[in-house]
Amino acid sequence: MARKPPTDPRVDTLAAECGVTPISFSSPIPPLTWCHYCGFLATSRDHIVPNSVGGVDAWWNLAPSCNQCNVAKADRQECSCLFCLRAMALWHLGFRRDGKTRAEKRRLKKLKELS
Ligand SMILES: [Zn+2]
Ligand SMILES: [Zn+2]
Image (cartoon, rainbow, N blue to C red; front, side, top):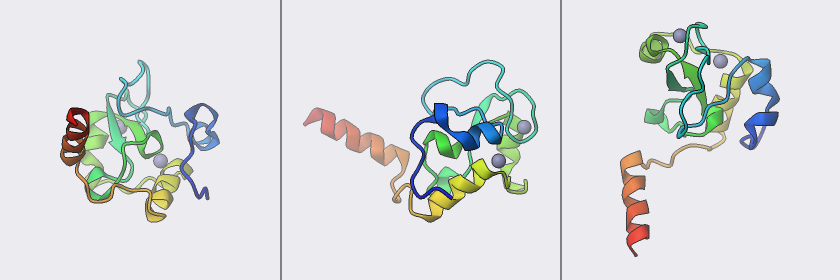
C-alpha cells in the first residue's frame, strides 16, 4: 500500500485496475463517465472517505458516482476495491483535513488575498 498520495492520475495503476475514471474536484465530470459503484451514468463526485470525517477533495479520494449511489452511501457497504482501500489507508496515515471546514479555508484564503 502506498505511503504517499499518488500525484499523477494519468499514470495511476490502481485507478486503471479498478476501472475508476480519475476526476478532480474542480473540473466537470467528463461525459460518459460511469458510476464507480453501480455502473450507471455518473453525475456527481463521491468522496470515498467522506468530507465529514476528514476526507480530502483530492482525486485519489474521489470516485465518479450516480446521484443514487452518492445519496445512498450511508446505507451502502464500503467498496473494497484497491482504489477505495488506498484512499482509506491514506486517510489512516494522516492525509486528511485537519478539522478545517471548507468554509473556514475559503475565509482564510480570502484573508490572505486581502493582505
Ligand atoms: Zn451508482
Ligand atoms: Zn471502490
